[in-house]
Length: 454
Image 1: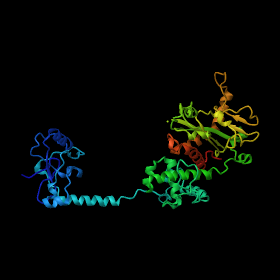
Image 2 (image 1 turned 60 degrees about the vertical axis):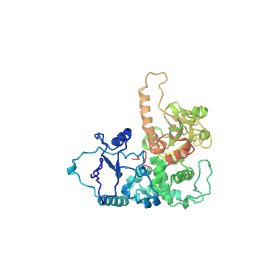
Image 3 (image 1 turned 45 degrees about the vertical axis):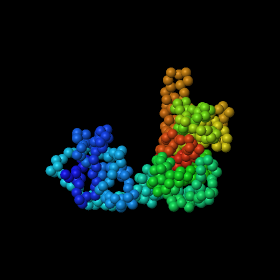
Image 4 (image 1 turned 60 degrees about the horizontal axis):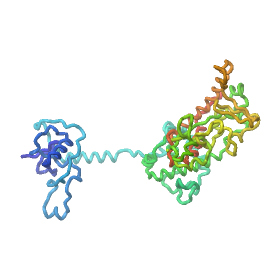
């Protein structure tokens, strides 16, 4: 009797090297076989067979070459292990009358495998590099946030001026100083492609393992590269003076601002970044945000980065000029630090130290200046105080202020377009957050102007 497989069209013949196997005698195992082969309709398995195609290679007993040669065993006499189970069929089997079945020729099957191999070899390599996008501004904007390759190249050349193979190094998270043991310059990726990888990480928050596949490098290399470029880019952009002089502000003052608030030097607002919750109770208290009911960092407490982090916040203060250019980026502070406390911070990196007599600051209602800063004026929407509602003049004032303040809120939106800052920052990356905040805020300068000058 010709043996036929119950799960496919294969039949036993002399030219075939496929082995056929009986169902096990154990009823439980029989049921497992039928379930996997999707042939629960079969009641009697005594004369049924299953061909070797439905078993994994590991299901067979491996014979040594010497034993096989002595016994004269051929490929179609393979033996199954006692606990072997057939592979599960992907889709339900359609039952076809034997008269309409056709044999699957093994030569045809071999040809199909050859074609499959050929097709796989013809698949275009999906690794990416900057050269692919030199004429594709849409994808440059998607991957990096820069409007065009021309702007991307301009920023890279700005960095390249200070690029030093002894400065950009593979560095570890534990060593805050730049190591000089292994230069990135020795890597097969060009400096421009390394910067491209770094920007994709910032803009798209692409997983490091995914970037490793895209650029055909290891995940550990991607990690070290991101750390190194973070430190390098920060060292360059943080050395650039963003704060314009009074004369420069006045020369570029928009007409509406000149008419309403001619002495405004800076428009400020705060933004928060969610972090992994600190295990340390004091760190949780420092990073707790009343506004978001979670933990955040807020701009300046450097010690926050030495805590072991579980979800809180850090907050940063950003200031823009009246014509919409970023002019101030604060350090990060614990989420428990109020907007009032942040704006009144003093020290070398504080906003207060940059302001001069007669300067006005525009903000929302959450900010207020200490009484000791009598030489400065804070402009914000009026409060209700004991009034039931604002007076008509106060409503008009609020509208005018908000019309100017909207630009700093749009700037915050651009910062959060860098998706790496949008999610929860993990403990292992918390020490880089302040660098990322500064870099991403700085790069918004290369976007479309926030205020259109008519």
